[in-house]
Length: 307
Length: 268
Image (cartoon, rainbow over all chains, first blue to last red; front, side):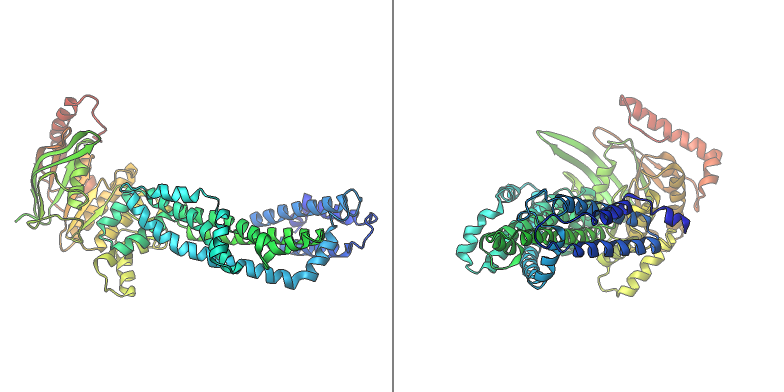
């Protein structure tokens, strides 16, 4: 027990105390800053963290969480000190954290709706790209092994920034949703196709020989041998495609959308509502991080056979 | 009739503008149930020779037949154990064996597949490792699993391409004994072609040794092994007959190596 208490002597907890101390400083912004929101937020996660640190046995995980919290506290402290606690930054451009939370809670239903709409569009375009690019890449990669020029075609199309497809997408598919799905599809298709072909191309010849001597059938060769053998590279392509998809969809929503977080940010920027812009930026950051985290978990699970 | 027969086999590889002759005028035959080792320094074409039997390669001239029929490709009458990468790293040990059996017998129910796989894995001493992935096993254990898969596919011919070449000396001895025991005690004796560069390994395991010389790969000599079966590795190695016999073979081996300046590694 004393060991556990000793371990609480760390920077994260020190930063928590600093945070509490600076709450004693007076507010310098003229408008209400809802300071209480950020205090409740920080105290709540600190309590959860303390409880977790006393019951968990996973030292490594705790360490990671502690470091992330420390960085979060540091950012919040800096944010408060630069804004409402000093009045150093412009009040209209840089809202205090408390008011951002207040706005977030107020807009929550709209935000959830926006995220949902964005994610469904991405899911649709992305899944479409995966189920077409991977089989095609496996087949094409197989032929490249015997010398073919298809990889140059893929490299050419892959090198075009996918945002240039938007005019065509809009002309051919007037509904914003359909056009967005198409652009996401076009953006993720090429990296996944290229990675799949490269993955197949790089399969150890001995693995294929071993499969051949087992008299593996054509389909089984494709899906039980080549697909898993190329999977490490395929997943790299998928991760690249996912990253591009978010960038593209947010841009598309800002240009021509009526839904999604990109639209939310663009809409309020027209009114100079910087509190909501900050809300939108933070929400987008959290959503993309969480999805990347899930993707990495899935990737680690699928490749658990590697050392 | 002989099980396997090679008649005046030549194998050329095209290498840019050159033609490289890997095998030249190779003829020999192997009886059903015979254990034959092919031995020679690296680069003598012994693995190329095996690839013809695997059905991964085809002779430029001559014939390679099994039961009198020309080999047209890979087939489920043969199973192969390579030095590396016999197993698929993304399948567990059991899944690897099951996948092998499935290719031979598509109709077996799932339960039976698992049962047969576990039986063969226990035969090679891998009980308790069924759910491990190959990369979690040592090199020796990987080769045990590869042997289990090959045997579980119940082929009539077993082709082994330096299967213990990458295993450390101590484990190599253990694996040789294991293979010897499995082969000598099986009811239907499989025909085995075993490629190696280890003379002791070849003498211990084989009925006959085919010695090859390099550039181009040719058969230098065929030697029948006179020692009775069942054999015991450690006892055999100590006997006077063995030492004399081994000496004789090594002398002919050295002749070949000294003919080629900078002879390759051969475990003597």
